[in-house]
Image (cartoon, rainbow, N blue to C red; front, side, top):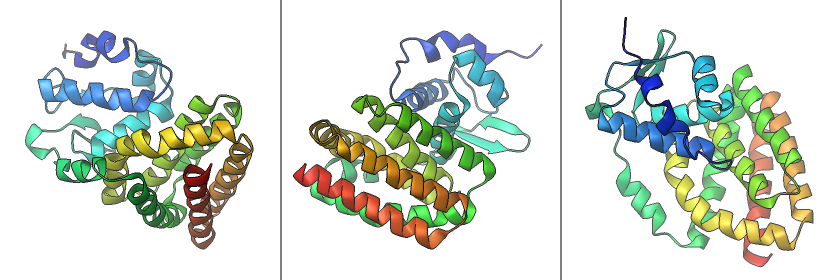
Length: 242
């Protein structure tokens, strides 16, 4: 009988996981287990439905964590299953993370404006039905959380990460993942404050995300590009001027 390494570490993976940034927390814990050898190279993780049940998280949350793990080289996903990689295969993009971390808010806003419009365009060209389902889930959660700014911004962030995942371009995804933590420390903190002061901005944000979702669903890459630019421009103005 094969050893079930995941089952042995369920307590660590789920303890005090919280209600916000769950996918990011899972990413960090999986990374630590892989780096520490508790999830050894070659180990095949159980089916996503099984893992979701074991960890008591949604499949979209788990998939977002898996996307980050795959981009950084911790795991590889194929039709045969999801496997833990050799440590030597892990992608090292720390220098970029450090550069982003030391950038000021204005630079981060401009960087996001340039990056995410192209990301939305590629997502519209390549999104699978599963990608659309994940984006729809995040969008519906944004609507449900419109009266809770902190939770709203968390699902907003998750939506954008799912857009990058829908490109199926590892470089775009790794760039978004590398920048995510700094976005949260800079842009998202400022956005939380501005949304609290201007609740109408939440309705505008929901409307733009709905239009973006429809454009990606319809494969309309030009509209997806334009709406994302409009959305990021609005966020930039909101963050800068409230």
